[in-house]
Length: 271
Ligand SMILES: NC(=O)c1ccc[n+]([C@@H]2O[C@H](COP(=O)([O-])OP(=O)(O)OC[C@H]3O[C@@H](n4cnc5c(N)ncnc54)[C@H](O)[C@@H]3O)[C@@H](O)[C@H]2O)c1
Image 1 (cartoon, protein in one colour):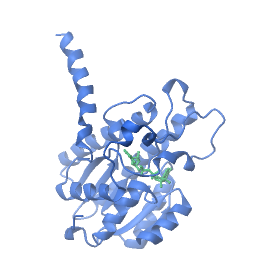
Image 2 (cartoon, rainbow, N blue to C red):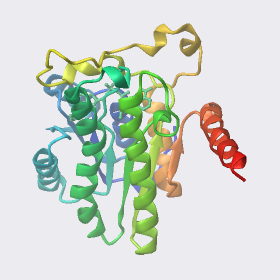
Image 3 (cartoon, rainbow, N blue to C red):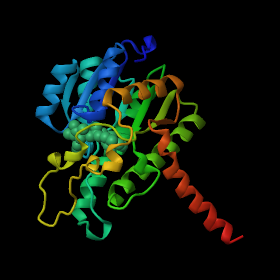
Image 4 (cartoon, helix red, strand yellow):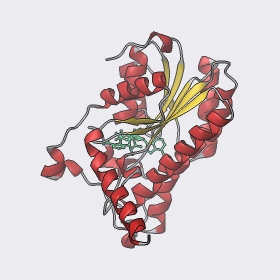
């Protein structure tokens, strides 16, 4: 584990911080002397995790702009500033595109994409006011750089998070901002994402998204899995290096390369 003295005393907000990767990031931040607000829609898990790791809990639904605004107010009230924001809350259920209901689409997009947009919209102006700037870390996925059958809705949201963060990073640099942006691209990480539907509100009868444990596939189960706190080390390193990408599984580059080869080949046939 990395120890990063320059992070001591900084204030971080981690959405989806009650479980999995968000909890792991929060644990590493706290181990580095940071004050951490964990924001989550699951009240019971939020309270339990906050007590376990020593974070400040704020019940938040990232799909609601008002709820994310209230999170910012609560953070400022408690700590007076915000230096790091991890827009990490997300859900990962599966269904084929042809079968998905409109409510399926809305839930996925509201949490995975609007959640990140709300986080940027609310917290970027606050961090711009810090003389030393700040860091935005948006959690995407390999599914934000390569598509997979059954994960179409998820991939749409994660491609969005990648596009959002890449563009924002360029704009921040052009404007001379002291805020930096990182897109976190985890590979396989032990978490509760396999039970994502536990936080879905008002599930309608025509819902088709289903929770799937991809570790049930022996080929996937035998790949390299990380523990959530390991991902926290990647995030700390990305903050330190001000890097746009934090990529936990370079062995998965081949999925992206395969897509890019298809793009290049398609182009070549027209030349
Ligand atoms: N676990 C992996 O292998 C993996 C791989 C790539 C990307 N990711 C991404 O990592 C992020 C974290 O997922 P995880 O794997 O730790 O899953 P997880 O289920 O363990 O944690 C997700 C957390 O987000 C919270 N959440 C869900 N909806 C919310 C909402 N509307 N508002 C606030 N909080 C909400 C949940 O209550 C939960 O605590 C997600 O964005 C996911 O897409 C995970």
